[in-house]
Length: 111
Image (cartoon, rainbow, N blue to C red):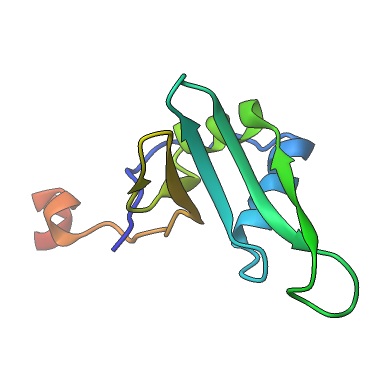
């Protein structure tokens, strides 16, 4: 199960909001590709025309916006698929988790 670390929420830029919307949309899975030379690209496959699966193109997302979302804990990376030339990670929206009882101060539990 993918979980994000708890972090303070920072306001999204317009570009960041667009990227997060795309990541949350399940019709177009987003992936991070890290090439052997260190080049990082976030993107998704966009089908062309009305017949899905018959042609299309890879759409790149702004790396700086995606990296900022990842650093802020708003997106998480899944298990990598590794080959000699690149590593591909599925990108998902972070799951907001409720604080557990272990995170609750003891005084709050007895009050």
